[in-house]
Image (cartoon, rainbow, N blue to C red; front, side):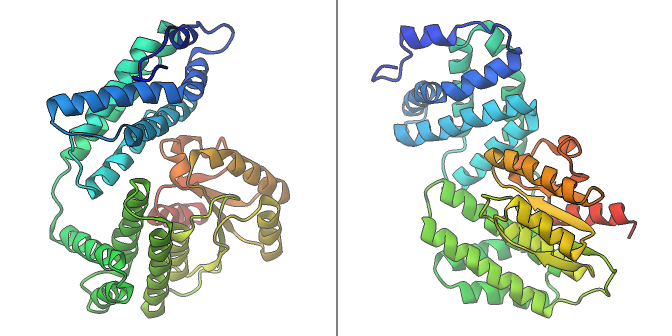
Length: 369
């Protein structure tokens, strides 16, 4: 790769190698992983040039190279898993982070186009052949996301409260933000379920987008997470609970995953539904999880993982748990499995939950509640 972000002849020669005994999609995924820095550099250079020429915008090359490096890695993961949705969802996530920064909405489709063009030009035909459907799915998702229908009045209220909470937290006025949400629930302007799913969860995701975009630092992200945890406890304090249903659930994130606030929101839903709820929080080792479930004879176990690289740890945890408790009912969830819902059973789980409400619905079905 030269200093102008152009592919050197040696680099191009490596990319034009043909797969031998390796299955074409796996070859494509492996090549994307090993050469992602080079692809990202070339694509970022083209995005910067187009933005300046077509939009009169001066973009930071390093920032866009970092974005495109991540997305090339995500493409490799999606191709390995044969999941178009997985790749498309990652572009939507980045679009949300760009929206939080009020960036020009034309930039992300432009970046997708340039990454596609770079890969088509650089890769051998057999390596390129599996990739077009992934770019088509991402482009369609971005277009549909941009044309999403307007919120109804209740949706506008939820969104408005979530935005106000976000602003109060960013201004280090968390008590004001928490009071706003709690009062809306007390006055029955907002149901407790909507407070959890339509206010806390979106606020959490937006902070994740802001952190990814570099708009907030680690300290601000920690402050937001702790504030949302405190708000969750306040809401649980005033919430009515159903009578015990005689069932118990254990929840944890996989070993290595330190993000547990969504898991705690899921635990809150189960507690309110009458479950004996044992939430272990973040990053519990597989052997300890299995031992805990054995000692407490749990009916259901929910395991969450945020990032793609954590899937291997999920597989190990499920294997360990199945060995200790062969009949244990298990649900998995989290960003690591977006687009892979149909593979939950192949991994050893009984289902995939995309949200706290989804987890409740599947639990009811599993135990006929």
